[in-house]
Image (tube, rainbow, N blue to C red; front, top):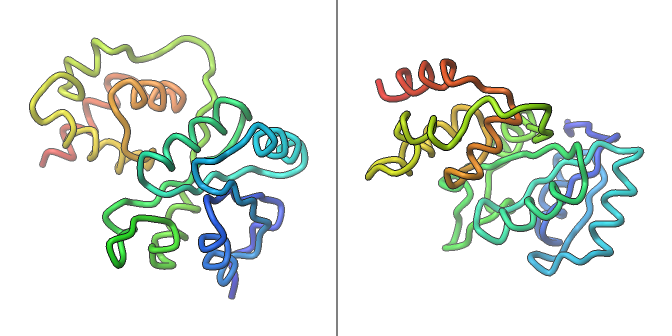
Length: 182
C-alpha cells in the first residue's frame, strides 16, 4: 500500500529520487536538478504552495542543505523531511534514493516547518553554555540534538534558528541534553 500524500508536492533533487519515492508514495513530485535550482524552480514552488503542502526532501549533504535553505528562504511555510545521513549511504553515494523505505517514511512522519514567530527564545550564548557551540564535542552534541528533534544536522547558527522556530526553551533543551548524554 502506498503512503498517500496527494495534497503534497515533494521537492527532490533528481529523477532517481522521484522514481524511487513514487514506488511507495502517492504524491506529486518536483525535481530541482540538484544544486542547479533556478529562480524559475523557486517561483513554481512558491506558486504551488498556495494549493499544496510543500515537503522538501533533499539529500543529507551540503548541496542538499543549500537547496533546502534556498527553498525555505524563498517559500514560507514549507515542511522539511530529514533522512539520517548514516542511513542514506549505498555504493559510496549519499542520498534519498539510497535510503531504505522505512527511513523515508520515518522522515515524512516527522516533518518540520521553520516559520519564525516572534522573539527568539534561545541565543548563541545559550548554545555555548549548553555545549552546543565552541567546545571540542559540540558537533557530536548537535548531532544528538538534531536527531532528537528531527531537524537534520546543522551548524550552531542554523541549529539556533531551527530551535527558535520550534519554540524550544533553554530548559527543554537542558533536559534533552541530560537525557541524550545518558
